[in-house]
Image (cartoon, rainbow, N blue to C red; front, top):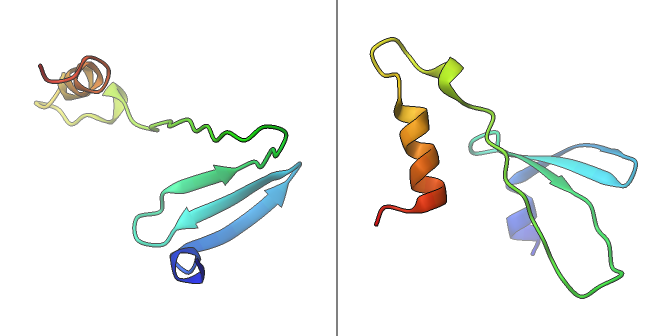
Length: 73
């Protein structure tokens, strides 16, 4: 287990939420433990969108959105 943790840097803890960064690519992970039920849930948020597209490459974000939610079939 320690081998996997070494790839993350602990950033801060506040209000029961712990923030970590994956050293390889700066992925931010927020961890909030709740042991009231034997389940695990997660959410993913992408901080990218059409405002980040380069001129001449517009529409890529919209295509990727459809691929994520509808699949490629």
